[in-house]
Amino acid sequence: MALIRSVFQDELDSVSQSLVDLTAMVSTSMLNATTAILTCDLKLAEEVIASDEKIDDFQHEVDSRIIDIIARQQPVASDLRALVTALRMGSDLERMGDLAHHVGKIARLRHPQSAVPPELTDVIKAMGSAAVRITDKTGVVISTRDTEMALQVEQDDDEMDDLHRKLIGVLIKPTWKHGIETAIDLTLLGRYYERYADHAVSISRRVYFLVTGKYSE
Image 1: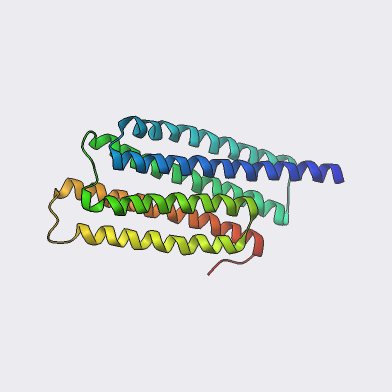
Image 2: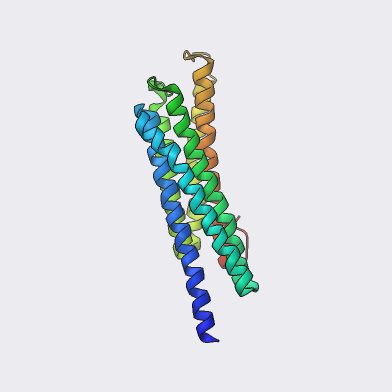
């Protein structure tokens, strides 16, 4: 019985590590997407777009393993909760990869021109940095189940929300001079970064609930 439990725990640990690996893939994708959008790097944008399929495939493989574990082990209580939570976290991470992919597509669409006018370069750069920082912290939360750090991710998301409001504030000023097309691009970019961070918060909340049995406030 102890051996069976040990094998099951190894499988749970493997799933957790795979989610951490997926987090690292998503973080790299958003880092590269931000660089591509700010530097008009078409090659890097194409790499981000191509990497989304790898992220999707990896997430689907993790999901398949989780479903297989549930079918074979028929877990209950906290073990079942951990596996169901892992399925949901994988879905959040896959969506984060999609959002990085969307940033890369805007960079490719506007190449060789920049989608970001000079006065908003610092805001987009800050949003990209915040996104990567939040994702990296989320990976630690998944790995360690650190509830205090899980709460910190929610606080970090406040920074992203502030940057998003700052971006929208510039777009709606009467002095905006870059046209509707650029305004639409930037509205979408802001939404992509903001939703990306929201998914990271969702993951951290799931870990918090997994550990404490309570929803974070």
